[in-house]
Length: 84
Image (cartoon, rainbow, N blue to C red; front, side):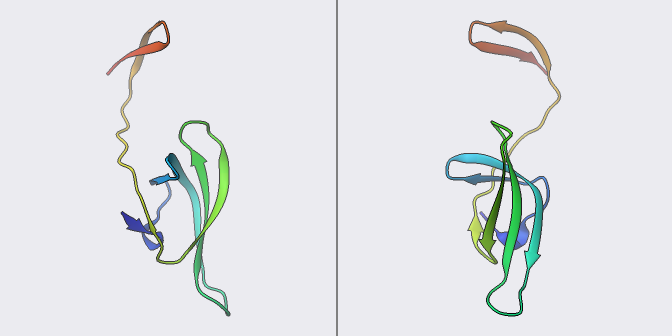
């Protein structure tokens, strides 16, 4: 669990049961009202890009994602087989 103040490009968030990668973020502190964080998020599964705004200091769930280079071997029915 992290706050919106801890966001960085490339971090993966778990929002509404989906994984999103932070592409861009901007901490905004207007003259009136509270600060907020404007983000651009990309869905890990579909590649869809959305803009989402959080209040500053809001807690968000982060996901641990391991990235490894793999080699595709073959497709077995509806499954894919990779080698690392």
